[in-house]
Picture 1 (cartoon, rainbow, N blue to C red):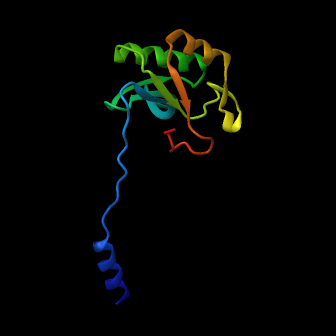
Picture 2 (picture 1 turned 45 degrees about the vertical axis):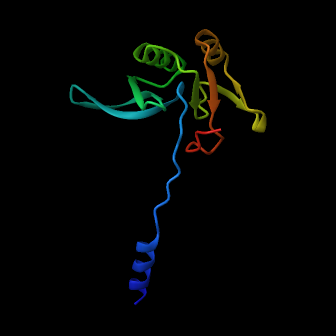
Picture 3 (picture 1 turned 90 degrees about the vertical axis):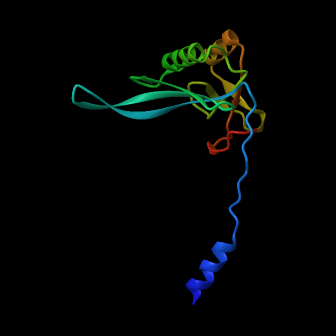
Length: 137
């Protein structure tokens, strides 16, 4: 009896969706991990991914490790692949870019990240701490 009531209730519920709207020129970038196989040997590699959120274009590069150099090279290769530089890039709070969290005042970025931003002239946006799924303002 309870099962029938629950099933009827579920069938009556409409699925709710919140449409995501991404502006042209916005991107998201992050590192992930990938297990790769080279000559029969499994190894973990760092995978740099940048997505143009409006068009869903994706760039991915695999590196031996996640560090400032591979972060910068990942950006350079992504910009080359896309044929331009996004206006604004959203990041989680990676230590490669963020030296310290300043609470509601924002982030204190690393010197190397500031140099890269100054060279390519893009805006950066960082997710709220401990909320990596909230990539909007």
